Length: 214
Image (cartoon, rainbow, N blue to C red; front, side, top):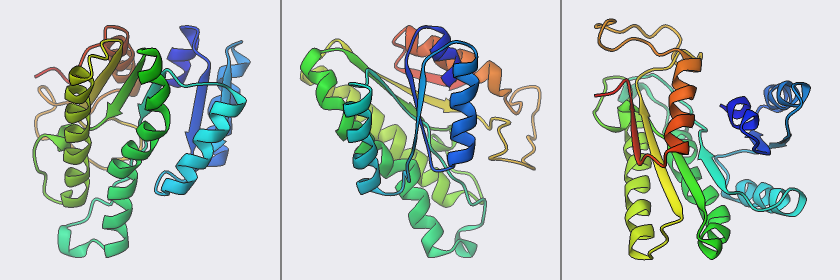
């Protein structure tokens, strides 16, 4: 997704707790002649998010498209999931959206120009066995996006948009071993296909995107 936005002319800021993977993404974008910067950040930490946000604003400039895409999953039954993992899941999958948006939304509101993209999940629409913490976190992300969209409307900030993406399982490694009971109707999604759909939805200011379409 980062590369697709870079190809459209965006200066892409990649933020990840995995420094090696993040550096690889930035290098791939730069090697193709596009603009990218990378920052290491622990998205479970409000303080670290605010620290990195300040660095980005000081070193690159104000952010106009914020994509909240960090996510973790335990894949364990509720009673088998450790307390710390439940807390971590909520911090990364839900609370991080609050802190990143609080950091970057003010300049969008000031200029009445910007876009907040929430990468949620189909698991934010219905419950799944073995994903109690994950589903709860994604339900929270969907609710956050919907409420933010309504608030922006009340404020009459017609130039600041939101998009929430609710994909079925994407073949990214996060859900290794997951199989679908109905592969013709609900296939495991190809990452390249999914990112094309997401980028197009953002460009069209589409408020919600289901993958596959329902």
